[in-house]
Length: 474
Image 1: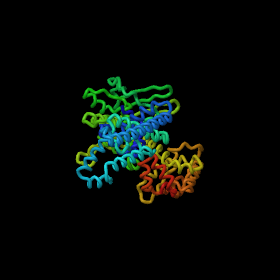
Image 2: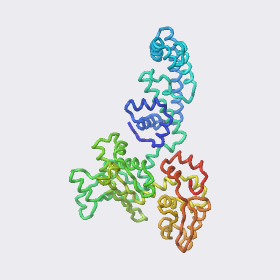
Image 3: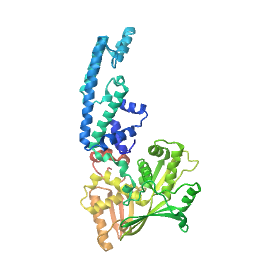
Image 4: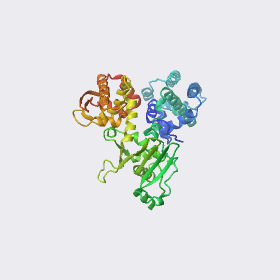
């Protein structure tokens, strides 16, 4: 039951705190760590009325189990000395005793003890230390392998529940990164179908180079277009023509988790089909692999128009797709998605907001903040050596809804905003206005900043707090 509820960053933080025994047990029992963490979160916290009360309960279970294991193990050691038991931890003592009887020097070398009695005392000390140390989990128990399979399963569940709950309460923003990448995050209009929709009445749409599906809302009409050549090819194979659905949404979200610097500089996303297939279907067999490829091709063939009362018509696409050449051995198994400007801007704007929040908070005017978002994306894509780019007034007028009516007044607005960015050492190093053109020199993008863009989340927050701004993270 994998609900895919938490982000990769959340999973990473949980894994960092998991004891080695816990990781090993999860893998040896045919789980993936990601699935296990998602399932524990869903069962323990997503369904809980109050997350803090559930965490308190899990911590209580952990403490009770630690005490029970410690007391039981100490009793087993005592019983072994009285020749009354060979259960649990006694199996370890028995193996050590066999070594002591046959190779006493080797016994001393391995355990640092001169007798079985001393070895028993050593075991007792290690058990008490583990029990008293609050930071140690159940799967940190030094003799974890002596627990029964059921005990190990329960211990793992409790440990992961405590770690997951602690991290979730400390930073809930880490939970929903995958959902924040859904299409309703990328654009402002809902057009994801319920997963079962398909294009209909295709026979009556023969004049156009594409087929159409219309969805009407109260004050908006959303029309989906799909390339006729793509559709006709599907129908040759007797397949239905599916709408954009929630699985497509999940595919885009999963692919975007792997974005690298080429995404920011060239709007290009390299998608490893095998990785995405395994993430979506939990198996990368040939059938599932082909299903992912088919869906990516379908998404590239789609266009959407939004007809809203009082706002006119807007047409958008998702991305173009390119497959590597047959002789491109390095990129076999990959496809390249080239995102449309609208989607690219939405994705980058969100990430710029998240990563540069502290820097943007230093800006006093909303005008400078608005300009900062726009110019930061430009800065990431600069390829020339000087870092200087000329932007005309028309560039700004296409992206900013100016309050004033004249070009002269609006250029003054741009100039004031650029001046504040320069004075705050943020994004803009210098600029010069020549008529209605602006020559802007940007601070260079540092390696630390690139890493922050790619790592995102908590690492970025720490990076921003540790580095004094000279530009942005430069």
